[in-house]
Length: 99
Ligand SMILES: N[C@@H](CCC(=O)N[C@@H](CS)C(=O)NCC(=O)O)C(=O)O
Image (tube, rainbow, N blue to C red; front, side, top):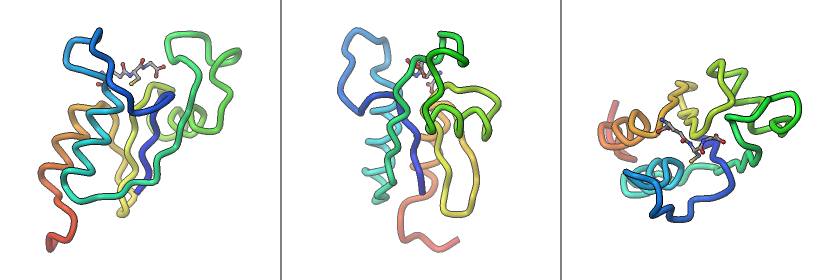
């Protein structure tokens, strides 16, 4: 699976609810997954044409219509955007569980 994130999975105590990319990553790890982490850099609220030309941002936009991260692509090819949905998916799909 691939997890597209911003600049890292560092804590962001200034953000209510924490750093979305970190929350998504930690939930996947806690569920036993080892996602390939793709740093996308950029900054989604800024114009895509200038700031978001990175491969990760462009792939996020191709997959979801938005260059906002985090975005998860599961081993089944399911695309999940929004950290809360990724956390929810991780809880419902622990690694090694039968389908
Ligand atoms: N509601 C979204 C918010 C995503 C979000 O705020 N992502 C952070 C990066 S962790 C951000 O700054 N996004 C702007 C960006 O992608 O540059 C979620 O929970 O996934």
